[in-house]
Image 1 (cartoon, helix red, strand yellow):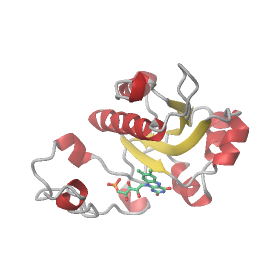
Image 2 (image 1 turned 90 degrees about the horizontal axis):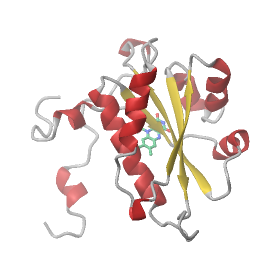
Image 3 (image 1 turned 60 degrees about the horizontal axis):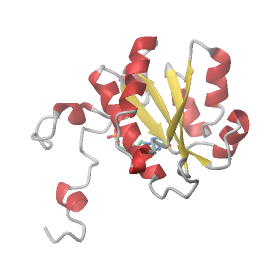
Image 4 (image 1 turned 90 degrees about the vertical axis):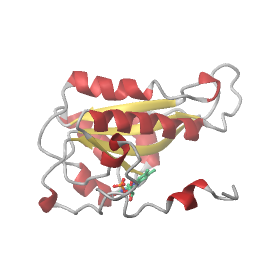
Length: 186
Ligand SMILES: Cc1cc2nc3c(=O)[nH]c(=O)nc-3n(C[C@H](O)[C@H](O)[C@H](O)COP(=O)(O)O)c2cc1C
């Protein structure tokens, strides 16, 4: 990890998306802390459009239900995570019902907050776009004005040898100037 953007905060540098999770459950109070962090994210009109459906492996029926909302490729490795979540975004403002064009943006921020809190607690988050939104909508009776945005696996790091190995930290990241200076002329 050394040598890659050394000025970036250690918490950010430590985060990555593993596919191998330890066979260790996440205590309820720890899970609550992770979810609480999402609530601290800023959002347009303070709408907080994000919602999390949480399933723990200790509850096999709930876990199987959430697992069935993932695409097969993700299901294969995510089934060993102790916690799975589906992330929803409410597309309309609650104060007037008008479309909220920043619902997904704000929801992404909430997930970022959750992820960093998880990292601070020694946990890892792996987000997944590879989901079956229609299946999730049906199983959880998701209202029409909510989108199923993403799923995530949460847990402690497993034995890397048993699955896919990670890329070196930051190695796949675009150069900082590419991310920061698009049309900014910097
Ligand atoms: C919105 C989003 C969707 C993603 N979807 C998947 C996915 O379906 N399957 C998967 O294995 N990884 C998925 N990832 C993980 C990315 O591939 C990963 O974050 C990226 O390669 C950078 O690696 P790192 O998180 O280890 O730094 C997703 C990440 C994000 C943020």
